[in-house]
Image (cartoon, rainbow, N blue to C red):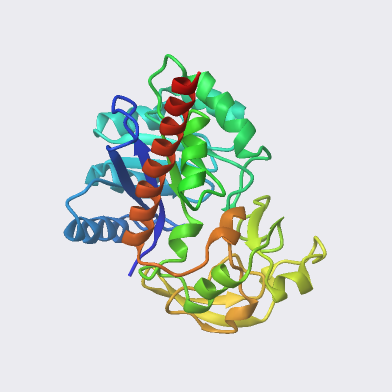
Length: 327
Protein backbone atom coordinates (compact mmCIF):
# COMPACT_ATOMS: atom_id res chain seq x y z
CA UNK A 1 0.00 0.00 0.00
CA UNK A 2 1.14 3.55 -0.63
CA UNK A 3 -0.16 7.09 -0.74
CA UNK A 4 -1.24 9.34 -3.54
CA UNK A 5 -0.30 12.87 -2.57
CA UNK A 6 -2.74 14.54 -4.93
CA UNK A 7 -4.25 14.34 -8.38
CA UNK A 8 -3.64 17.09 -10.91
CA UNK A 9 -6.14 17.94 -13.67
CA UNK A 10 -5.46 20.24 -16.55
CA UNK A 11 -7.10 21.53 -19.70
CA UNK A 12 -5.23 21.91 -22.96
CA UNK A 13 -5.69 25.57 -23.89
CA UNK A 14 -5.56 24.60 -27.57
CA UNK A 15 -8.79 22.68 -27.17
CA UNK A 16 -12.17 24.33 -27.56
CA UNK A 17 -14.48 24.94 -24.63
CA UNK A 18 -16.35 23.30 -23.13
CA UNK A 19 -13.26 21.26 -22.30
CA UNK A 20 -13.24 17.91 -24.03
CA UNK A 21 -9.54 17.30 -23.44
CA UNK A 22 -9.17 16.95 -19.67
CA UNK A 23 -6.12 15.03 -18.53
CA UNK A 24 -4.99 14.02 -15.08
CA UNK A 25 -1.75 13.07 -13.39
CA UNK A 26 -1.27 11.15 -10.16
CA UNK A 27 1.43 12.32 -7.78
CA UNK A 28 2.69 9.74 -5.30
CA UNK A 29 4.34 10.87 -2.09
CA UNK A 30 8.01 10.16 -1.50
CA UNK A 31 9.33 9.10 1.91
CA UNK A 32 10.61 11.71 4.38
CA UNK A 33 14.02 10.03 4.73
CA UNK A 34 16.61 8.71 2.32
CA UNK A 35 15.31 5.37 1.01
CA UNK A 36 16.17 5.22 -2.71
CA UNK A 37 15.77 1.45 -3.09
CA UNK A 38 12.33 1.50 -1.50
CA UNK A 39 11.32 4.46 -3.64
CA UNK A 40 12.36 2.64 -6.80
CA UNK A 41 10.17 -0.30 -5.74
CA UNK A 42 7.28 2.10 -5.13
CA UNK A 43 7.65 3.59 -8.60
CA UNK A 44 7.83 0.16 -10.22
CA UNK A 45 4.74 -1.03 -8.35
CA UNK A 46 2.88 2.03 -9.61
CA UNK A 47 4.03 1.34 -13.17
CA UNK A 48 2.65 -2.18 -12.89
CA UNK A 49 -0.78 -0.74 -12.08
CA UNK A 50 -1.08 1.81 -14.88
CA UNK A 51 0.16 2.68 -18.33
CA UNK A 52 -0.49 6.38 -17.64
CA UNK A 53 2.21 8.91 -16.71
CA UNK A 54 2.57 9.78 -13.03
CA UNK A 55 4.85 11.84 -10.83
CA UNK A 56 6.56 11.70 -7.46
CA UNK A 57 6.32 14.50 -4.88
CA UNK A 58 9.34 15.30 -2.72
CA UNK A 59 9.45 17.61 0.31
CA UNK A 60 12.82 19.36 0.17
CA UNK A 61 12.76 20.17 3.90
CA UNK A 62 13.82 16.57 4.59
CA UNK A 63 16.83 14.52 3.35
CA UNK A 64 16.14 13.99 -0.33
CA UNK A 65 19.22 13.90 -2.58
CA UNK A 66 19.41 10.10 -2.90
CA UNK A 67 15.64 9.87 -3.33
CA UNK A 68 15.66 12.43 -6.15
CA UNK A 69 18.51 10.55 -7.82
CA UNK A 70 16.39 7.38 -7.70
CA UNK A 71 13.34 9.19 -9.10
CA UNK A 72 15.34 10.58 -12.01
CA UNK A 73 16.91 7.19 -12.71
CA UNK A 74 13.42 5.71 -12.93
CA UNK A 75 12.45 8.49 -15.35
CA UNK A 76 8.97 9.18 -14.02
CA UNK A 77 6.99 11.79 -15.91
CA UNK A 78 7.15 14.51 -13.26
CA UNK A 79 9.21 15.41 -10.21
CA UNK A 80 7.13 17.68 -7.98
CA UNK A 81 9.02 19.55 -5.25
CA UNK A 82 7.83 21.54 -2.27
CA UNK A 83 9.05 23.46 0.77
CA UNK A 84 12.59 24.20 -0.32
CA UNK A 85 14.67 25.70 -3.10
CA UNK A 86 13.97 24.47 -6.61
CA UNK A 87 17.48 25.25 -7.83
CA UNK A 88 18.84 25.69 -11.33
CA UNK A 89 20.98 22.59 -10.78
CA UNK A 90 17.95 20.48 -9.82
CA UNK A 91 16.06 21.66 -12.90
CA UNK A 92 19.03 20.75 -15.12
CA UNK A 93 19.32 17.30 -13.52
CA UNK A 94 15.64 16.63 -14.11
CA UNK A 95 15.73 17.80 -17.71
CA UNK A 96 18.84 15.75 -18.46
CA UNK A 97 16.91 12.69 -17.25
CA UNK A 98 13.90 13.61 -19.40
CA UNK A 99 11.78 14.40 -16.34
CA UNK A 100 9.52 17.45 -16.01
CA UNK A 101 9.98 19.43 -12.80
CA UNK A 102 7.07 21.18 -11.09
CA UNK A 103 7.54 23.17 -7.87
CA UNK A 104 4.64 24.00 -5.58
CA UNK A 105 4.84 27.62 -4.44
CA UNK A 106 3.01 29.68 -1.85
CA UNK A 107 4.13 33.18 -2.75
CA UNK A 108 4.75 35.43 -5.71
CA UNK A 109 8.46 35.57 -4.82
CA UNK A 110 8.74 31.78 -4.99
CA UNK A 111 6.99 31.79 -8.34
CA UNK A 112 9.45 34.36 -9.71
CA UNK A 113 12.38 32.14 -8.69
CA UNK A 114 10.71 29.13 -10.33
CA UNK A 115 10.28 30.98 -13.61
CA UNK A 116 13.89 32.15 -13.49
CA UNK A 117 15.32 28.61 -13.22
CA UNK A 118 13.16 27.26 -16.05
CA UNK A 119 10.63 24.92 -14.45
CA UNK A 120 8.06 23.10 -16.59
CA UNK A 121 4.94 24.10 -14.62
CA UNK A 122 4.06 25.72 -11.31
CA UNK A 123 1.54 24.59 -8.70
CA UNK A 124 0.22 27.61 -6.81
CA UNK A 125 -0.91 26.72 -3.29
CA UNK A 126 -3.33 29.07 -1.55
CA UNK A 127 -3.74 29.48 2.19
CA UNK A 128 -6.98 27.48 1.86
CA UNK A 129 -5.05 24.25 1.32
CA UNK A 130 -4.98 21.37 3.77
CA UNK A 131 -1.83 19.92 5.29
CA UNK A 132 1.35 21.97 5.41
CA UNK A 133 0.89 25.43 3.94
CA UNK A 134 3.97 27.41 2.93
CA UNK A 135 2.40 30.77 2.05
CA UNK A 136 0.12 33.42 3.49
CA UNK A 137 -1.89 34.43 0.41
CA UNK A 138 -5.32 33.23 -0.62
CA UNK A 139 -5.61 31.47 -3.97
CA UNK A 140 -7.96 34.04 -5.50
CA UNK A 141 -5.33 36.79 -5.19
CA UNK A 142 -2.09 34.82 -5.64
CA UNK A 143 -3.14 32.73 -8.64
CA UNK A 144 -3.83 35.54 -11.15
CA UNK A 145 -0.56 37.26 -10.18
CA UNK A 146 1.38 34.11 -11.03
CA UNK A 147 -0.62 33.66 -14.24
CA UNK A 148 0.38 37.19 -15.27
CA UNK A 149 3.98 36.48 -14.31
CA UNK A 150 4.35 33.43 -16.57
CA UNK A 151 2.62 34.97 -19.57
CA UNK A 152 4.98 34.54 -22.51
CA UNK A 153 7.02 31.81 -20.79
CA UNK A 154 4.78 28.86 -21.76
CA UNK A 155 4.72 27.63 -18.16
CA UNK A 156 1.36 26.07 -17.17
CA UNK A 157 -0.04 27.18 -13.81
CA UNK A 158 -1.95 24.72 -11.63
CA UNK A 159 -4.17 25.89 -8.75
CA UNK A 160 -4.24 24.15 -5.36
CA UNK A 161 -6.07 24.90 -2.15
CA UNK A 162 -9.71 24.47 -1.21
CA UNK A 163 -10.80 23.02 -4.58
CA UNK A 164 -13.04 19.98 -4.25
CA UNK A 165 -15.65 20.20 -7.02
CA UNK A 166 -16.39 21.47 -10.51
CA UNK A 167 -17.14 25.00 -9.29
CA UNK A 168 -13.68 25.40 -7.82
CA UNK A 169 -12.21 23.88 -10.97
CA UNK A 170 -13.98 26.35 -13.26
CA UNK A 171 -13.16 29.26 -10.94
CA UNK A 172 -9.46 28.37 -11.16
CA UNK A 173 -9.69 28.24 -14.96
CA UNK A 174 -11.38 31.65 -14.95
CA UNK A 175 -8.45 33.02 -12.94
CA UNK A 176 -6.09 31.79 -15.64
CA UNK A 177 -4.95 28.40 -14.36
CA UNK A 178 -4.45 25.55 -16.81
CA UNK A 179 -5.43 23.01 -14.18
CA UNK A 180 -6.05 22.17 -10.54
CA UNK A 181 -4.51 19.91 -7.91
CA UNK A 182 -6.85 18.16 -5.48
CA UNK A 183 -5.74 16.57 -2.22
CA UNK A 184 -8.47 16.61 0.45
CA UNK A 185 -11.19 15.51 -1.99
CA UNK A 186 -9.23 12.34 -2.81
CA UNK A 187 -8.59 11.55 0.84
CA UNK A 188 -12.36 11.12 1.08
CA UNK A 189 -12.57 8.35 -1.54
CA UNK A 190 -13.08 4.62 -1.30
CA UNK A 191 -9.55 3.90 -2.53
CA UNK A 192 -7.82 6.37 -0.20
CA UNK A 193 -5.34 4.91 2.29
CA UNK A 194 -6.62 7.22 5.02
CA UNK A 195 -8.06 5.58 8.13
CA UNK A 196 -11.85 5.03 7.91
CA UNK A 197 -12.42 7.35 10.89
CA UNK A 198 -10.38 10.08 9.21
CA UNK A 199 -12.50 9.72 6.07
CA UNK A 200 -15.67 9.92 8.12
CA UNK A 201 -14.49 13.10 9.84
CA UNK A 202 -13.86 14.68 6.43
CA UNK A 203 -17.57 14.25 5.71
CA UNK A 204 -18.88 15.09 9.19
CA UNK A 205 -16.76 18.14 10.05
CA UNK A 206 -16.89 21.35 8.04
CA UNK A 207 -14.36 23.65 9.69
CA UNK A 208 -10.58 23.83 9.58
CA UNK A 209 -7.90 25.88 11.29
CA UNK A 210 -4.43 27.09 10.37
CA UNK A 211 -2.12 26.04 13.22
CA UNK A 212 1.30 24.78 14.25
CA UNK A 213 0.24 22.35 17.00
CA UNK A 214 1.30 19.14 15.26
CA UNK A 215 4.78 17.88 14.40
CA UNK A 216 6.68 20.85 15.83
CA UNK A 217 9.83 18.84 16.58
CA UNK A 218 10.05 16.92 13.33
CA UNK A 219 9.11 19.78 11.02
CA UNK A 220 9.64 23.10 12.86
CA UNK A 221 8.26 26.27 11.37
CA UNK A 222 5.78 24.39 9.21
CA UNK A 223 2.20 25.60 9.82
CA UNK A 224 -0.63 23.42 8.62
CA UNK A 225 -4.39 23.36 8.13
CA UNK A 226 -6.31 20.72 10.07
CA UNK A 227 -9.85 19.66 10.80
CA UNK A 228 -11.34 21.17 13.94
CA UNK A 229 -11.73 17.85 15.70
CA UNK A 230 -12.69 17.77 19.40
CA UNK A 231 -9.09 16.79 20.25
CA UNK A 232 -7.65 19.71 18.32
CA UNK A 233 -10.09 22.18 19.88
CA UNK A 234 -9.03 21.01 23.35
CA UNK A 235 -5.35 21.58 22.54
CA UNK A 236 -5.37 24.39 19.95
CA UNK A 237 -3.62 26.74 22.41
CA UNK A 238 -0.80 24.33 23.16
CA UNK A 239 2.14 26.30 24.64
CA UNK A 240 4.86 26.97 22.10
CA UNK A 241 7.52 25.07 24.08
CA UNK A 242 5.51 21.82 23.91
CA UNK A 243 5.98 19.31 21.09
CA UNK A 244 5.55 15.62 20.34
CA UNK A 245 8.91 14.41 21.65
CA UNK A 246 7.91 14.24 25.32
CA UNK A 247 4.32 13.08 24.77
CA UNK A 248 2.78 9.64 25.35
CA UNK A 249 2.53 7.11 22.53
CA UNK A 250 -1.09 7.05 21.34
CA UNK A 251 -0.86 4.63 18.42
CA UNK A 252 1.14 2.84 15.75
CA UNK A 253 1.15 2.86 11.96
CA UNK A 254 2.82 1.07 9.10
CA UNK A 255 4.32 3.84 6.98
CA UNK A 256 6.04 2.81 3.76
CA UNK A 257 6.41 -0.69 5.17
CA UNK A 258 7.95 0.36 8.51
CA UNK A 259 6.08 0.32 11.82
CA UNK A 260 6.17 3.72 13.50
CA UNK A 261 5.05 4.85 16.94
CA UNK A 262 2.74 7.86 16.96
CA UNK A 263 3.03 10.26 19.86
CA UNK A 264 0.44 12.83 20.83
CA UNK A 265 0.82 15.98 18.69
CA UNK A 266 2.81 14.12 16.03
CA UNK A 267 2.28 15.26 12.45
CA UNK A 268 1.43 11.73 11.30
CA UNK A 269 -2.09 11.22 9.94
CA UNK A 270 -3.90 7.93 10.64
CA UNK A 271 -3.82 5.53 7.70
CA UNK A 272 -5.54 2.20 7.06
CA UNK A 273 -3.03 0.34 9.28
CA UNK A 274 -3.13 2.74 12.22
CA UNK A 275 -4.16 1.46 15.63
CA UNK A 276 -4.67 3.34 18.88
CA UNK A 277 -6.39 6.60 19.75
CA UNK A 278 -7.33 7.69 16.23
CA UNK A 279 -9.50 10.57 17.49
CA UNK A 280 -6.40 12.22 19.00
CA UNK A 281 -4.33 12.20 15.81
CA UNK A 282 -3.86 15.03 13.34
CA UNK A 283 -6.33 15.16 10.46
CA UNK A 284 -5.26 17.53 7.69
CA UNK A 285 -7.93 19.09 5.47
CA UNK A 286 -8.39 22.09 3.20
CA UNK A 287 -11.10 24.73 3.58
CA UNK A 288 -13.17 23.08 0.86
CA UNK A 289 -13.90 20.16 3.18
CA UNK A 290 -17.38 21.53 3.92
CA UNK A 291 -18.34 20.69 0.33
CA UNK A 292 -17.47 17.00 0.74
CA UNK A 293 -20.68 15.18 1.58
CA UNK A 294 -19.91 11.53 0.86
CA UNK A 295 -17.17 8.99 0.31
CA UNK A 296 -17.06 8.17 -3.40
CA UNK A 297 -14.90 6.02 -5.66
CA UNK A 298 -12.05 8.10 -7.08
CA UNK A 299 -13.39 7.49 -10.58
CA UNK A 300 -16.73 9.05 -9.61
CA UNK A 301 -14.97 12.13 -8.24
CA UNK A 302 -13.06 12.51 -11.50
CA UNK A 303 -16.15 12.05 -13.65
CA UNK A 304 -18.18 14.55 -11.62
CA UNK A 305 -15.38 17.08 -11.71
CA UNK A 306 -14.86 16.89 -15.47
CA UNK A 307 -18.52 16.56 -16.49
CA UNK A 308 -19.56 19.23 -14.01
CA UNK A 309 -16.96 21.66 -15.37
CA UNK A 310 -18.06 20.98 -18.93
CA UNK A 311 -21.70 21.60 -18.01
CA UNK A 312 -20.94 24.81 -16.11
CA UNK A 313 -18.91 26.27 -18.97
CA UNK A 314 -21.48 25.19 -21.55
CA UNK A 315 -24.25 26.83 -19.54
CA UNK A 316 -22.23 30.05 -19.32
CA UNK A 317 -21.53 30.06 -23.05
CA UNK A 318 -25.18 29.35 -23.81
CA UNK A 319 -26.42 32.15 -21.56
CA UNK A 320 -23.94 34.62 -23.11
CA UNK A 321 -25.06 33.66 -26.60
CA UNK A 322 -28.73 34.08 -25.65
CA UNK A 323 -28.00 37.52 -24.16
CA UNK A 324 -26.18 38.62 -27.31
CA UNK A 325 -29.05 37.47 -29.51
CA UNK A 326 -31.54 39.39 -27.38
CA UNK A 327 -29.45 42.55 -27.73
